[in-house]
Length: 284
Image (cartoon, rainbow, N blue to C red):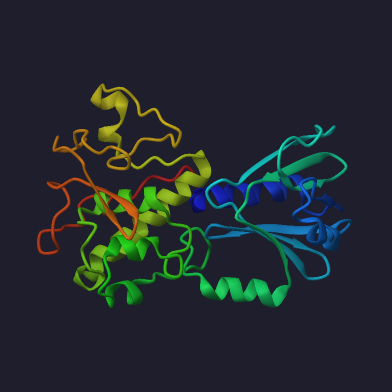
């Protein structure tokens, strides 16, 4: 499932292509026909992201809410638009560009009240200006800190990769309870998460390793998989830790995959904010 940085990149792209334009909206697949008719011929005023949710705002107070889920994909290009191929849930077009949406978990028209309700259910988005540190919730919880990072009602937009990686960078064992994390350590993690995700928006991929652990410096082969980016623990079970050489461990928590280094990530009494104290350098 795309993490929050991907949705923010999509929102920026859609603003660039369509904001201020009168757009034609249709549903070649047929599953969004009624919703498309409500916004067809309206002006797209803005596109924005909140966590993993993409929102297109139209004149007249209508919004199209999209959640890509596991299988959703968006493509776009300049006119002329190609003939729709496959299950295109929504096609949007201006006098210059086209956009196709396939396979989303949600594609629906909202009014202002429904958008407000959606946002009220979500937690703090690290990528939105003015977002607040949710430390009060995290530090008062008996739930594992990994689960708290993944809870979209607490941290909106953080997914598996960022959750696993920010915990490694902070030296925190994933099953550590929120209330066992020192306030200064959580503050460092929150700062680090915001910086990492902001860098992801700029670069279009998730990189979490410090300069000393890049392939070039370590003289190792670069990571190659569909997620891209250089990471410490995510999808590296059994491989040596880039810092200490210990094999990366894997288990499950609430049906989600945990990855961690048993040597670098310690119980609360031994944890230190040594990695999170050096947040990722943003390219902004």
